[in-house]
Length: 570
Image (cartoon, rainbow, N blue to C red; front, side, top):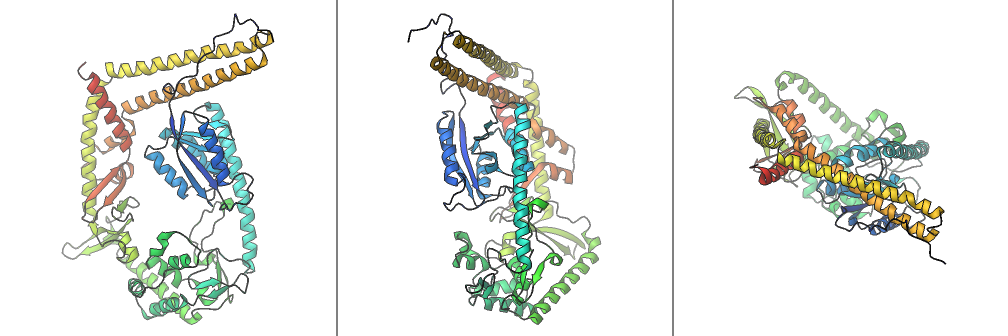
């Protein structure tokens, strides 16, 4: 083939080297709703998803694989999945800043929650999100594409999940009405019958413990005493029995102990009278029901379906005891209403035992000496395990309030000091130089994009005029496309970094919110809600307070130290 004139051809540009393009610590996330067993799954197996994502990352030098996070057998409409939780922990720890999935449905099928992650959480955390088959890259798409494609795809996934849910729930309900359905795991005291379909047989190893519990309850034995007796005699727990029967596999279940919630679940379950019970923990995604403990009135009970472990008379006697105890508790609660005024759990959901990780339980007491009620926090791990997992340490609520107030006051002082430094540097040469550097970088990238785009547009004219053959045209076009993609990524990153610097230098949410506590002479509920993220209590009553917006504070502190060290005297 004769060579064609290249007189007017633009010179081929080199791809940017690895030092000019930001690299990302990428995580692969894969999910399958039904546990992968090697059967045909239309290409969505854990292995296939992983292979597609690996191939994608390996073809892009700016993506470095940090790890693979997998949820095998987890539904897409919920986000409290073990693998996903581990992934988000590493994202928050700064180990991962890019997530790659095969498609959006593998990430999640809940329209609202998936959109919340893609449109709010990931952008806030600076996380890049890539869905391969959807051709979606949060760092490469424009706002219009993100606003249209992502919600539409999420809505399709959400509708699909709810349609499947409706069909499954309807089928289960029909089978439950005739007793032709059993839960995945039999209740403690029973095993699935090998001779009769959809029926239970008595588990002779554990049934004696069931009878003991009902007899003890009828005799007035406390739950704490029951748990102590069972633990002392080495009675196998429900979780441990599931491991022995091969129903559960996790090693942690081999070391469980008896506790109050387990005893109550057993002592109130009609299954031990020979009945099948449905609807105790209903789920129906298509109806918006995500899983809850239903009241007894909503249970569906079929009597006489298997051999009873306890008599109906004994079971009813135990239920009467529970009902009487509820009435007594309610009467005491109402009688002490006035004494409880001003004594409330102000740190509900925010206070944990630093040693075992369990929530601290709030308890009220009455001081005869001071003639008033007071509040204490007791380790929930100790209460649940009756002393088997943690020690019985506690702390007075007033001491927690004093500690939290002191920490907030200290941060107020830090905020004032940082604000003075920021105000001194604001508008100075340090801030100007940073903003000018960001502006220059953004301007340079914008100009380069315009040049490359102009050259890329001229390629087709050269091809049509015969100056380039098809092979040369396609090669040059691919090179320009790669160059454009790299420059657009750099531009997005530069704009993002500029926005982050401006946000940090303004003090962010921390500086704004910490000043809501200015002038407060005591700890207010508003301060707890807005500023306190978590309170950790140690066995020796040490208090560790974790406040919200701590990341904002650390970023501001780092920026101010850097600017002051470089420009403080100018």
